[in-house]
Structures are given as C-alpha cells and as structure tokens.
Image (tube, rainbow, N blue to C red; front, side):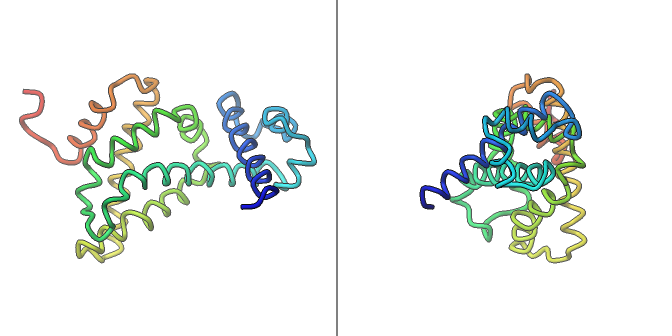
Length: 195
C-alpha cells in the first residue's frame, strides 16, 4: 500500500469508528453526514471522496468490523486447518473464549449491532460464518447435506446470540469462563453440572 492509499484507508477507518461512536448515542437514521465528519475530524469533501451517503458508510463500517472480527478469531484458530476441525469443536472453549473476549473488548459496537440488526444485514454476517466456518468444517466431517448444515448452524448461532445479548445487557459483568460454560452446557447438557 503506497502513502496515498494508506492515507485514504486511515481516513476510512476514522469514519467507520466515528460512525460506531455515534451509533452508541443515537439511531442510525438520525445520524447526519456532518456529524460523522465532525466526529471523525474530516471535512465533507473527504466524506464524499469515500462514500455517496451514510448508507455506504454503514455497509463499509459493517465490513470493516466483520473483517476485524474474523482476523482476530482467525489468529486463534490458525493452527487448526479446516479439514481438522470438527463441528463439535465450535462448542468448545478454544473457539468460544476468543469470541467472548472480542465481544467484551468491543461491547459498545456489539450493542450497536444488536440495536441496529436490520441496518447491519445480519444475513450477510451469517452467510460469511456459514461459508468460512460451518460448511468447510461439516464437509470435512462428512456432513454434506446443505439443509442439515444450515439448520445446525442456525441453531448454534441463534442460541449463541441470545446468550451474548443477555451478557451484553448485563454489561458483560459475568466472567467469560462462566458464560463459555453456559454456552457449552446449552449445547451439550451435563446432568451432573451444578450438583
């Protein structure tokens, strides 16, 4: 990346992060281009050099954050090639803890996501998870029926999201290991737990 490309990228990052900060204060539909510019400390012409409108910025901000999420997560599973993954392993501390750590680190942004799900296109995020994690892992284990893979992933992700939303509502006060254990317990009940 040359110097001007780096500057262009850095300015885009500033605007993405400015949008996230503003979304913590108000709904997306109430955010103006001028507010984004003021928050990012850029002028309007700089905004229009990057985007046509705030919806373009929103889509880029979503992609920026999702890439940040996957890059963070990928470094944790980098030593485990997809062909060696087992769907069951998605319900293990090895994957759940890095995810919860990321959520806690960026809890403000995750709260924004939960309050603006339609604006952030959760189906796009789900599709990315399905393509990057679930389908390759299931196929490596001989599960090739796309309907089965879709149902399995929806079940897991819906439950995970519900628990994370509850955790976010409590400002991530419960210990990460405790939340991880609850998620695992929901998917693989242990009758002796808590006795």
